[in-house]
Image (cartoon, rainbow, N blue to C red; front, side, top):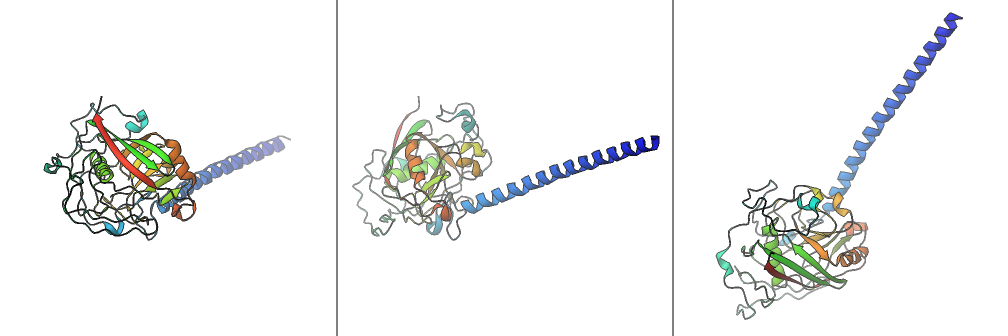
Length: 331
């Protein structure tokens, strides 16, 4: 009997040990499965952000075939800042503001004193629109910064990046009128001075008027800004990157630059984050604005998107009728 009891105890211990080993193995399998799933998710996100055959201005694209000039100005590392602790009041949630780097602006250009007015006598050659494209109107070489009152002529192609002319202490509000409604976007010059300067430059030369949202992925992003409507066009130049610290910057309503995946490849293409789509990004897109009213318009554009073919083309094509920017001293 004692031997039987010891045998039973031994068998019980062995069964418990076997059960413990099976539980440990299951946990190891789950961890391995989680790693594999994470790798698959990352791979899918990368596939979404890089369109085969098109310089993915990403959620994004930017210069594509029209890229001619690279203007390095910022890096992914936090730049030295003389403005630490003095960034103007932001419309951003605290978690988003904390995910951005305050940046020193470049020196103001000498080409800012005389805005290009509508009376420009320089002859231009217009390439007519076709399909989703708008007319391509080349600007004169070394064109100056446009007037902020909308009086400058329209150009949709340039030979070089814009001179730096904005005042980062001012408050810039972009009004984007689309066929789906109107959005207002607060630009963030203290966090992305070069990118905001570029957007103001293009908007006040009426670059975005008539340009479609050519890539729309439901639950992810609305992407536009390519005058050719193909996803591979841009303004004729590229600008430097001004990346955020983390993906927390890409909250719903975030306005960010698309790019080809290469450094300093942004140009005119941008995207608006919809819903929780920012969680699928990496901090490799310059974030430079936040929708402050009309987010329902971005949602409406997004509802017309297509999950197939990376959202290009969307099921319903919306376009920008106009984009204008106003500036006022920050309070």
